[in-house]
Image (cartoon, rainbow, N blue to C red; front, side, top):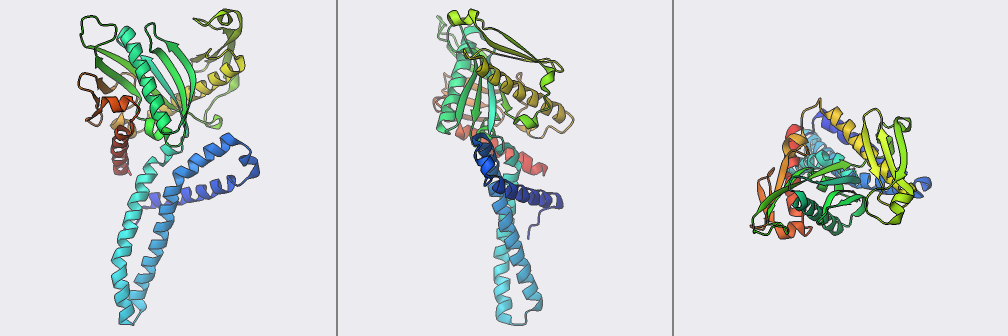
Length: 360
């Protein structure tokens, strides 16, 4: 019978205990009155449930195997001994299968507990065409989120002169959002004839995508006293309200120099809420990056660090193909940009899972 090593067994027992705590919390009337808390805890429970069910099934199967082995040692009835010998290989195979399934779920469990993320898209090389491409990427992610029934909240949007966007920031929440979109960070490249091209020549343009897991307040080392907050009038196009009413929020985290500006709505309170939300996500990502800098690259060495200088994918309009360079696979461009990212995501997850399993 396959037996998990001591560290793995201890981790599985810890997850089982955490799951029981979550179950109890989700029955607490005080927590049930907080919809955000319920959503967060429910996502964590959903991520743990397959692991817990597998572990409990493996434990029951292990006990049955031990009982059969004891029977073979002590039982004198040959019919019962024959029955035990017949059942034993089947149960041992079942235990091995359950262990493999648990390991696969375990390596992705931490990602699946992240219920929401911040997605930042910026136009890169290519001028107006890069802004149009950045807008196409944003629309692709919106369509994918719609298919998966995730919630999308606009945090920031700066339009390009000819359309598309110079940069956009959205919050995406829902079960599996981080697991699926966490691989999108990096440089995306497009090869096509721009709408602004009069000679019919193919241009190469880029846009960068950053994906930040959105943390809960308690997970971020953030002292409000370290943040300088300024309220100003908004800038740019937008009508009379823009330059007359102070609604824009500018935050500076003084220890790190991280800045956030938010003027997306005409409400100062909404802009402040969105600004702090984005600041927490950026600080969390910075803290995580610093902590991981001393460790082995693990997932990032395989799937990509999300560094904005790293080209991860090329969109070839002439061939109607999307090529992901990390897995070396091609996908139908029309389907992919139409929101059907799941086949591509599934291959990335499969590759990442195999790498993580090898590292256990």
